[in-house]
Structures are given as structure tokens and as C-alpha cells.
Length: 54
Image (cartoon, rainbow, N blue to C red; front, side, top):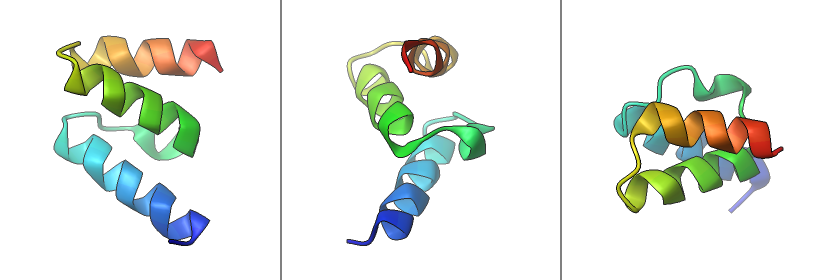
């Protein structure tokens, strides 16, 4: 999968998880946030933590 396609898919997954405004996040940040959401963390906290970790 190309990097652009992967980023697009991660952003789509973020949107589906309720993480709007993820367009400025990197692929790594998105993967981290989605993993945290998958473990039960709320979307906004996961996003904030992923952004601050980078």
C-alpha cells in the first residue's frame, strides 16, 4: 500500500471512530490513537495523547 493510501485509510478509520479533525495528524499519530481507541480509551483523549507523544 502506498504511503498516501495508508494515510487516507487511517484518516477514514479515525473519522469512523469519531476522531474528527485528524487531517493534521501523521500516520504514526493516527495509528497510535486508533490503537488506544481499540483498547477502550475515549477518542478525544487518545487523539490528544497521540499528538503530544510526537
